[in-house]
Every structure is written in C-alpha cells, then in structure tokens.
Image 1: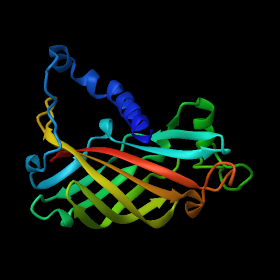
Image 2: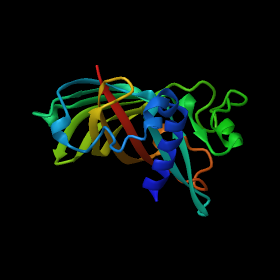
Image 3: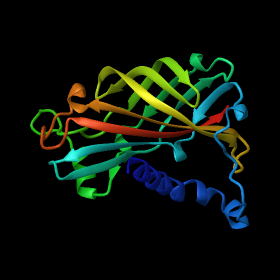
Image 4: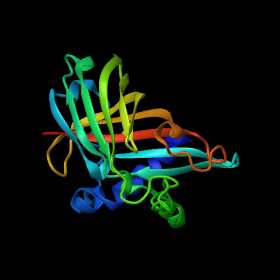
Length: 217
C-alpha cells in the first residue's frame, strides 16, 4: 500500500515537472526507459538531487480510523558515491518543510499556521526552517543499504537509520546527465522533534518514505 501511495505521489511530481519539460520525448513513445537497477551503470562522483523528481512522503495514523499522508517536495542535496567503495558513500539532503502539501488545503494551512499568543505552533509554524539529513555511516548489502545519520527538524537533531534501496541508473534523456535513483524508508517519533500537537489522537509515530533522483555533476 505504501509503495502505491509513493508511486502516486511521484507521478504527481512528474506530471508537474519532468513531463512538461520533455514533450518531444514522450510524444515519441520510446519503448525503453533510460534507467535500470543495474549497479554497473553507476560511475563514481558527486551527484546532486533533482528537486523536481525527489520527495519525502509522511504517514500518520488519524484517530485510529485510517492512515493519512502528506508530501515534502523540492528535496535538494548531494550524494558522493564510488561503486568500488559503496560504504564510503556520503549523503547530505535538505527538505524544505515550508513546501509541505496534503490533499486538504485546510490541513496544509494548519501545518504552517503561526503560533498564537507567543506559544509554540501546533505543527511546523509559519516559515519553518528546512529539515536536513546528513549520513554518518553506510552498510551495503547488495542492492540495499542501511544508512545511519542525523536528522535535524524543528531545530532538534536526532539519529535516524534509513533502509535504502537502489532503484535505477542511466542517462537522463532530457538533460544528458548520469542519474541514479534510490528509495528509502524510516520511522520517527514527532514528539522527539517537539511536534506534539494532538497526541495521541494523531500518532506520534511518523513513517517516512523517500524517493530521490541524483544527477551527476
């Protein structure tokens, strides 16, 4: 179910970004996609996240009735990668919290609502600082990896482990850049980052799913 939701979110980002930028490519109806999960396609170097095709999806439990989702888009950052020494990889990505969006305009507005009477905001508040993940270690197992790192959110830094998967590599036909893709997931407790409004009616546990395309610089 999570993968289906992530795919839908990625499709939304693609429709508003990449497809509009490459009408000729899609009009041709090319039979083969340019990327494939083949490690031999990856070359060493520094890669930058493609903000138009990178996102973080969050999932919380709503009152025990159902799961609810939102998206942070415009993810930026860098990946230093050497296929001959994958455990030396280093990731540093920034997530603009102010870009958060949900299926409800009212809820999105609430997430970014300023604090009242000098108190803390319910969620992120107005003009929130970006979140940032910086890796501290990588353990590779074939096409997957455990990435240890520090997540800074709402001015608080906590250790987080990402379960990551290599999803594809190749040359982006719209700009000629070597591109690698990864998906990852983790779980955080929002109260650890002083985001504790409506606990426990809205779950403390927040599941994060990340999909990032990195382009070689």
